[in-house]
Length: 542
Image (cartoon, rainbow, N blue to C red; front, side, top):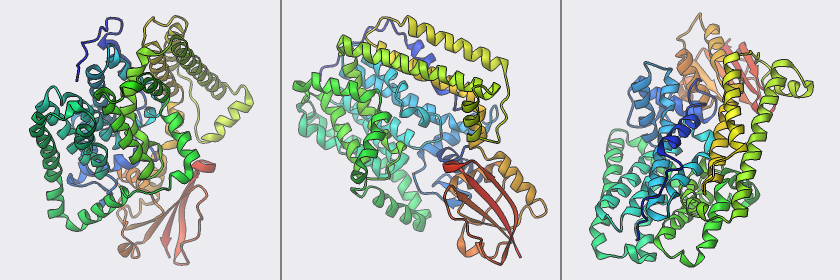
């Protein structure tokens, strides 16, 4: 494989990319407690790990939570231990997410530098920051981000393999093994076949001198997996067996997504924007060279990721993250070669659409603060009726400065082959930062459980440590109440029947039958509306 010369990057220094990443990563990651949904659920695992010292396998409220192996939770728990004394524990632990994203972008930049021409490394970072689908997941507790980092590192290892076999094999082996510790068998489906696919297609990987390196890489993967699997199965054979059966189910091929092809395509179209049109151009332009290693590597990764996303697991945005590394590499190859008209359109579209969205956020904030225009103000208020807006001059001044800086970039963008990616990266960062500045409290009020947890705790003041059974409670709610008010719940049906209290949770459009004559309603709270409606009811026996 021919290694490209180091790119000339004087027009975009590394410190500029670092500063842009910090502006992208920190807003939304810091400044709020665990939210409902994935954020609260996965924080619950981290909190249990820190409180109970159960590091071998994930638990929530003391019960096994076997969605993913523990690698991401280990990282988040270590961040919580390191920085939990200077900031709130959820903020400290949530730093694991931008940490994983940073590793992924760094590895992809190194890989792009090896595979393609100058400025591909900068292009890959900008394309990652500007990727719409990565935005929310990069700022929440999300174990799939650990897989993202491992997958990107595996690409780097395989790119190094022909020229530096031992180093490449070590990196690829470590990445694959750690990927298994991040999400289990899907990581092996995503990365392990590379050892066979690449030699079968590319002559650069057919050297007999690579055989020891290949064996070394596979051995490292097996060793890392065994270091966790053996203690897990020896100490907790029943739980480990349940986890293994669940893993086999998760990677079993199915065709359910094909029956929802329209929904799937709609998800991928916005999730992978603006990568897929640029990657498509790269493949068309280099269609006579796709047999070369610089394209076989990302294409093989893309094919495995497509098979994993379409043929296994649930249809949800986070499940599409395995597609990201390969598409970033292909788009990084195609971006500098875009024709002037296409580059100008992508650049203009990004600047205009993101500027318009940012200005709309200001308009919506004004309507929320001052009640005009009334229809918009009423619609915003209906979303979170409990929220009381508060005016803050520091927020307004900082937001105005950021908006002015973005407008200047829109008016006079820098001249560079990377300008379309720069426009999307800076635009997404601007919109995300403005949204968090102006509506952070609004979203936090809608997604947090602080007031509900404190109300439940107050209702239980007479018997705070009594047995509380639960019905309909999800992992997110259990995790939030356990962390916020140190409440303990009996989640095992065999034990819950003897509890004095019963906490019932119902989401939107769920039936709400009374639990029976043995229970009387003691406390309740409702919030949200339509699809975000939630109801908590506390019953007392007799």
